[in-house]
Length: 602
Ligand SMILES: Nc1ncnc2c1ncn2[C@@H]1O[C@H](COP(=O)(O)OP(=O)(O)O)[C@@H](O)[C@H]1O
Ligand SMILES: [Mg+2]
Image (cartoon, rainbow, N blue to C red):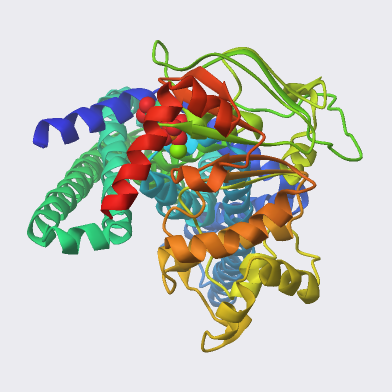
């Protein structure tokens, strides 16, 4: 297990390196473009606040040099004024910082709101392959944990960085105006600072990336365990699950401790260097005041203050570096989703038919989910408008895959699919999918009432339409017998209902949407034979006007199809009517015979 986790982590980290720091920086800051006015307002406040605060040492210098000199007359009034000014500056600065924090918190929240919506929207449009290739828990972690981490950067991190950055610029300007030589002297420590920063940069970033990966694994594991709770209980795997979770949680713990360790080491080192800078100012400045007389006491005081203030933002910039790294590591993962291109895209100038009649053709279709693993081979099939055909074949033969190609969940690898004589890739995806309904093998109902679920494919459906469909399918009385009838809440995934019941509702849901093409993929496999026989009449009625494809294991239910297509290992091996195929004594005949005899034994 350990090696696997290790491998996964490595794989993820390698994949993540596709964004450089600079790209991330541009993109994260690029997000402010939607909020130009607000960002400008905040910037103006920050600029003013940092100006006020950097004027304070000048105020002190003037006070010292003009009014605090031994042996001169007493300057009580002037000192009162200077003291008042000092207080005023501090208060102004405080008010400005307060406004900026409130302002910016709101702006940051707006951005988080927007990012979450963007990521969710993107997820709605991604194609099937994304969801089969990506663990859902990892995606959830990106939308929750990573958006939060980026949010922290946007709400608190960036504002402090800007404040420090502006502060730094003011201080630099003032320092150079005061004394170029002294300023340059203070800066002799900067190269050391840079070397250390570069040394830490890589390590901090790697450490924070590990924390993002670790928390994603914890979330993914949690999600999977919750979804698979039934299997866990059935096979008594609780102990192993706890152990596995502990491992992942331990990894998360270790990653965070390490990240904290790396970044906490950084601070004191920088502080020592800053102190070195101050020492230089004291020694050389003190000499200049006393022996050379080139600067005054007040100026020395101001200079010391500025050089301290210069290193303060430098220190906090480096402290924020960890927030930045954490935020960037998160941003990287979010951009991965945002940049993901759906593999099935709508045509740039799609054909938008008023209605789809339902004439379907597959020409020499090959399909593979993965390179070199052919799933469908040279499929040729014509289904006329209003015709009802059946697909038969063993599990894994490729039946469901054919239905996925017809709804364009995937694009063919070779050959073409035509709908009403047009290449399916040219037809508007939304119109296509509105007109094709698949009742899938694995039913999913959403939390909410049965009525809401039944209207899922057609929001505007009237209750009466829904009742009619349920009456035809023989479902109506059954639903009315539930405690709250159509208003019964089925809970997430439909967990309140039996699988057979869910299948029937899923069937009715597709019919309410009233598509011109209906695909039933083993849609009553968990319904008992008696109920199945009962709904069969309803199904036949519903299929009358529509093109339909039925996949069923109980061959008795498809006997009446106008054509039966037998698939084996992704190839069509027989096709014809029930009678013709029986006479042929091929694969279909074998399947049918087996079922007959096993039914007798049953
Ligand atoms: N998302 C997928 N990725 C890779 N292989 C898949 C995927 N879905 C199905 N397959 C493979 O394609 C083959 C056909 O599957 P499917 O069409 O579901 O069969 P059937 O519906 O006839 O039981 C199977 O071998 C299956 O393992
Ligand atoms: Mg299938």
